Image (tube, rainbow, N blue to C red; front, side, top):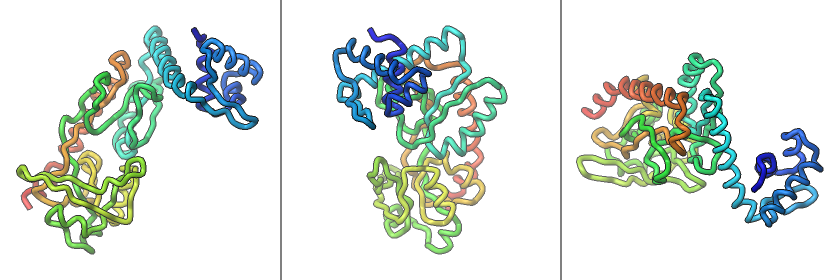
Length: 307
């Protein structure tokens, strides 16, 4: 069995892409790091890296072992925190828009209540792999298909909404049917380079897949929202992301009578053992803040649906 320090060194070499930076991070010499890596490879009976004068690259065996090593180190760290009864840490992955416009204030509020709280945050619209990734929990729209993950519901159902700024609508007539969106400048999202060029809408059992296009395309929800605020086109985002803009009149909901896809919001956790007291407190703050934010724009939405 590999010892803990050799395992930590292996992960650092992979993450820092070099023996010398990993050695510096562990405060050992490059020679000692090289011996430790050879010791680990001898124990496993495989080569973990291909080596050149300037680069160390994971072999196929190394890539496979890295996932297990990272997961093992996270489990051991979790156990160590549990032994010391240290729940003063939050490790979260969250989309850019929710991170900047919702979670920022909540984390600052929680930090005031827990001055020693350690916060580690990743802002990324791509989903973090909670089994092999760097984080214990993620704030996600939609439902997960992984049965081993634990979901802490925040909003059970709310919908996507198409909206635009008053400046855009002053220059373009508002669409009255989803099929008219194709004639407008739409701010298109993309996932791993693939544009999501169909927006789905529901009305009394009717479902329409609207094909959209535009000059602005990005994989960042906050950027899409900001472009819409700047009058560059129509965006299609979860209601929670644009609730404050709708309430302030900076964005105007479109297509009265039509609703975008329904989507839940949850804190997703890799295992029940990782639901710490700090995470439960954040969960409660999120429920309160999200319901309040959506509640404040209900009058705007009610008026829009009656239009």
